[in-house]
Image 1 (cartoon, helix red, strand yellow):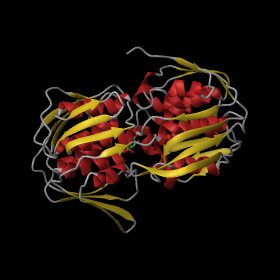
Image 2 (image 1 turned 90 degrees about the vertical axis):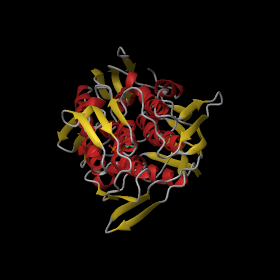
Image 3 (image 1 turned 60 degrees about the vertical axis):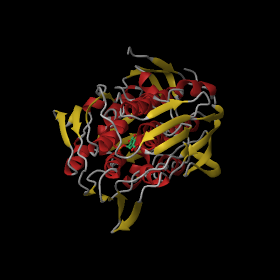
Image 4 (image 1 turned 90 degrees about the horizontal axis):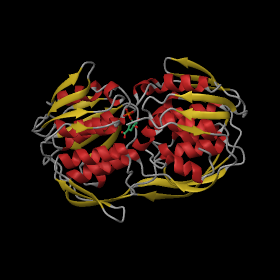
Length: 440
Ligand code: S3P
């Protein structure tokens, strides 16, 4: 696809109420588990972005019936745990690391063989973190050099249950093992020294899997009993906090703004950004807290605010791992210094988000020092950034959206070299920002 450049300009106050699309992590999981249940599940509010559609296509290729109704509700007839079929062609995962890693877990314990392919960004990302534990369960892998895509998996059924201590804080690795455990006789255990997003645990339980979580010596021990029977569910997907992050930061940075982002998922394993922005002086209030689909949700009101730099504790990183690019933009306009550490995982996301954000922020006039595991940013104290540059997004949706937000708070326009990747997670991003008054 040819690149789609776009320009974002300094804007007057942002105003209005908006809803962001459904949570990407929950959308992937709702399709996968529905496809493994016996009977018809319904999913409302599914994120209809390219990443999630890649998961839907893969589950169809392995036998599930998945349809979107005219009412926007997705209906999925599952094949039952153990019932996945051999796909007839390679599974193209596009840009989606979550689809790839979680589906590798599913395939690993079914008697099927398949090949995963992806775009240039996904083909650079490490897969050894999932192939290592899944090999211990008996699956065989043949990967491209460096443990990357294209990669072939030969699943084993019955597989061998393992107890695995996560060497990196990764919800994708945890979920891949738990999904592999669904079709494995006995009990599969994952030890998670640092808690990561727990949507898999919540949803597996919701579908009737026998899954327990215990705290042992400061770590989470998650146990799942295999050969499970999953019962179909009706799922309502809350709005994605990782998408909400962009209008939230934009409203903080543009003076006089006052917006509400409705129906934002605020699972504590995802809500770190709001806490950090409030600690920086951001005027953010949570209205009408409630529960949607077993997840905490609220409407988030945000007003333009003078922000102050802070030291961000590495402990909070897992609960905002995808939000650092846009936090860096907020820090670039805060008063004083913001220090972030413990972000080594950002280097293996859709792009090297530490390097790419440092380069782009410098190009638009911010003061940034790159360290091995984070950025140190000296903010302008509320003065607009210079802007007037084109920023390279490296097939990374969150880089594109972060610099779009920066453009709203820059003297000269910020040009994004390619907005196309935004369709992976937040296809209506530009329209939604325009609805709030942004110029793009
Ligand atoms: C995700 C987990 C995180 C996150 C990604 C979605 C998930 O990745 O960055 O956007 O849905 O499990 P890691 O597991 O690599 O941290």
